[in-house]
Amino acid sequence: MNLKTTLFTLLLLFAAAVSVVAQDKTAGRIKGKVRVESGTPAGVAVILREGEREVGRVFTDKNGEFVISKVKPGFYGLTFRKAGLSIGTIEAVEVKAGKTRSLGDRLVLTIDEGSIAFIRGSVFTADGRSAQRIKVDLLRVLEDGSTKKIDSRLTNETGSFVFRLTPDNGKYRLSVSVKDAEPLTKDVEIDGAAVYRIALTLPGK
Image (cartoon, rainbow, N blue to C red; front, side, top):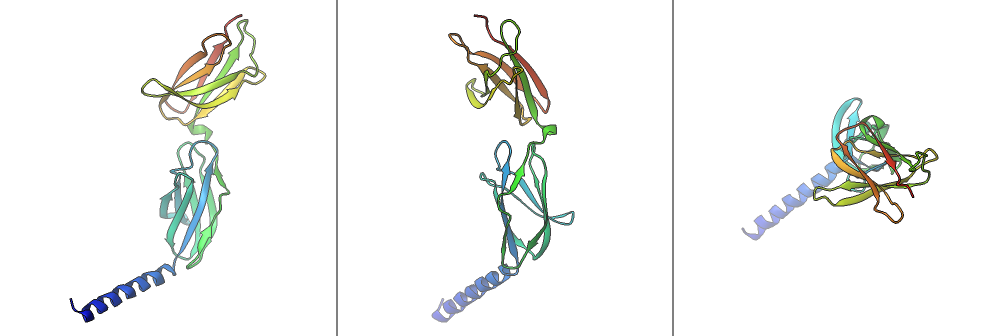
């Protein structure tokens, strides 16, 4: 390849790059951050709509952040979906050519109580009375039999507590520390969205 051919090729590549940059300036971007009431903000589907018609889709990263690129100027709606969480929407989002529309981090997806598992329980004393302000630990039982603590609650004035979980199949263990004795435990198998009721009775003195 001689010098003239090389220069001509480089000029073509430069012209193509300029063309791409020029094309990018005719479109805009949308970015934002999704927060969730419970669980991880990763994997939330962010659906870009023109009216009710889907025109694009991305997913949030581990921090709940997302970017939708190459959006034509205009007004759009956004829908946010993830199993176990309520559906979020934002309407009338204007996108301008060559601009990035930032939505900030104001969107929070709450738990959809129709698609989660509840572990509701009560702790009683040996004589059958409600045990108040007792710490109840929730642990996930792993495949190898080990456990990982994921949450804690204090019983209320009626000795009750509640944990909210995604409805994924899994084994959990409730544990209450008992002075001068082994912890009081009970295992629960979660196999879908439902209410799982548990009663724990503290040993007598």
